[in-house]
Image (cartoon, rainbow, N blue to C red; front, side, top):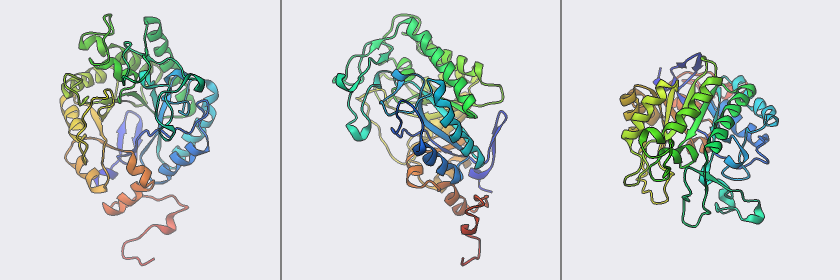
Length: 360
């Protein structure tokens, strides 16, 4: 069988295949609540055969939202509908995962189709948080440099969000430390200009992420996987490098992280990203080899054969798809046919499954 359809076990969780639905912001919530859109959006990808289905970036606090329309998990009332989603995903044989996030200085914006701009005061804008009072763009409002008390609250927010995620039935938690959001801002020497224990040296800049990992891992049972998404490179001179990422991945592995989700960029408006098919796959390979940790490959992977080749070459352990899953919720079932893997379809759809030598 194609390697893409070989099961993968991480701790006590077995993924039926290596295809993952990436966290993708839907900007369709009110007050952080999941709703029917999220159920159908995520549920259809589970029906479509993915081994692991992640929610979008889910805010651990109100001020951690990118926009007022973001999904959230900062209060107990959010649990009920999230549980409905996780239960449905699991019923399809997929594993429900959740990405926990704080947007940092990139918070308090409008959704993309509403202009993707900073909220105005009359639109209930809020003060954003960052390692230092440095905005992402010169035209953005200056964020508040976080105090140690703010940092302690952030860790509590991540811990409480992880507890709620478990109550909601999620079996994998991913910490979002990429794309210029808060934890990524602390990692980067370009955005972290602090002069305390959380800034300056590499060891100080990674300190907050390691502490967040500690509090999240402490509430997960040893049986459940923990992923971290990072921006493997910053695409800016003197910014975060792949060597930094390998060094960080070693520390994360020691803290009980099971897999590094290897994306890139997002923390500097001056970035120059040479986007092309599979352009981020080498990062997953270097981190996998350099830190001896499982990795997920992301970024302009669009065909089943590309996914299979990445796995066969040992460049990554999971294939994490975003836009291709928007284009085709049933990508995984279609990939099975192309790669000649015989996988189970939902019984409700079985009569439409194409059989070999069949004209049906």
